[in-house]
Image (cartoon, rainbow, N blue to C red; front, side, top):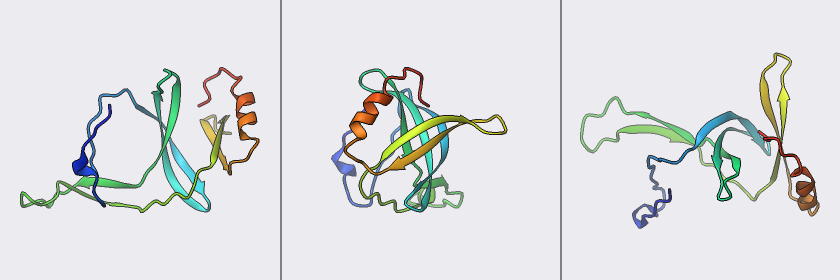
Length: 132
């Protein structure tokens, strides 16, 4: 569901809506971006072509209930967010694995874009098995 509102297009402001879309958090972990670790989540959903995809999100912070709220104007929740600055894009690849302890996990690897990426992706797409 797409929400449009000009009243939230202001610097340092945002909005959260409840959603009725069928998104499921199916994965969580961490990833290193150029020496900085980030907590990530994978949400399984369908794209426009009705294909199952794993959409990746980086955690930017937390909100928790403001237990000290005493006035109407006090915030209902407070928290801390990290200022995340992404510079460009990278290619990400994944491999299913099983740890020595028998736990299944997905190994992630990022690299810079290169001219041979499109050819490599087309050869990788031949596998019909769920990749995550």
